[in-house]
Length: 444
Image 1 (cartoon, helix red, strand yellow):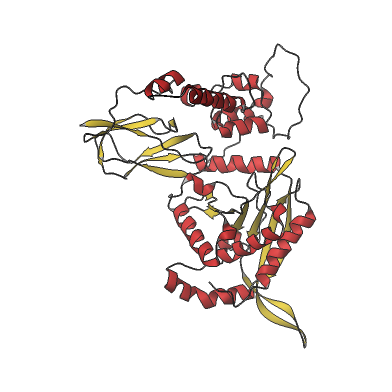
Image 2 (cartoon, helix red, strand yellow):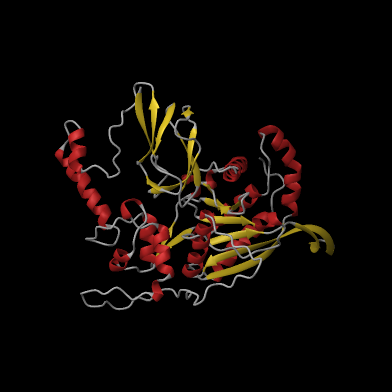
């Protein structure tokens, strides 16, 4: 028999660590190859980690609510011969000399290049000369909030090896205004203007008799932080329009049964809405951008985020990658797959990354309209309301008539730093036109 180290696998670009939510097995349990053994959570998504080998769980090294970094050993399995033996569990990474000694015939120039790249990556945090390790998320918050190196040094980290986690830095920000500024030996720099922050309450919130206190879960905390950050970052403006989607309703009614019989997939309205959004983005590519300081980053790909409500009441936004390259049938399958996996906690971290524009269907809850909050770093989001039959005035060659039509409100929220009313309004009007003039001969 031999021992096998189960490590935390890569969870996608920018994800450096994950929190252990729960173990799906106990020490002493036998597991099969590809069995899910632990549920983990990142800032993006919850997911399961399978074991690549069959064997017996003999040691769990990371317990519930503990944080593990990518590549760290989280459990040890006893397996049949042939697996890598475990000598001593080491939490600290190996030195460059140790790595070089383990690799035969290493080219010294290659090692030097790797060391230079690591130093470059360290300096790119914006805290040159510092021995602090900051994850991409913590670094982003620190830069956004203009947190100095001395302030970071004062934060007690609860992560691996004392590293600063997202929760640590957010807790620091919540009390930042009430703490004395850290003293520095050098001259005090000019003050930097920052977005106003809500003052901390001077007294605890009153709780009445019979009131129930419910602790936010991890996902709700992430959503709350993201929404507040977006409102502090982007000046929101919202435009509204009412659209006659009678042609869309008739077309879907005509094709939905045939499509489900042929493809085994349900045909919803969402792929039609996404198709119209993609066409409008192609008309107005400056809506498909993000902001980095005083720079506008124009995105090459059109990746549509799709706000999805989860059974536990939380929200997640899976992403339809390269939506402009998909047919209506392809969009339908991609949307159905993402929605199913989102509601069954089977999304991968990369499934929620890279969105360049987002749609939210508030009509699914019977709402006529809403004013959605922009997911950063995007600059716009569209909400579609419920489709309702109403009397409407139609222009005909014989004059105006009143007819029963299927009408729907759409609301478009956009970042007024880079999207003015003309661009935001014209984009919304083009989405409206594509839906209202939907071709009844469209094939799927």
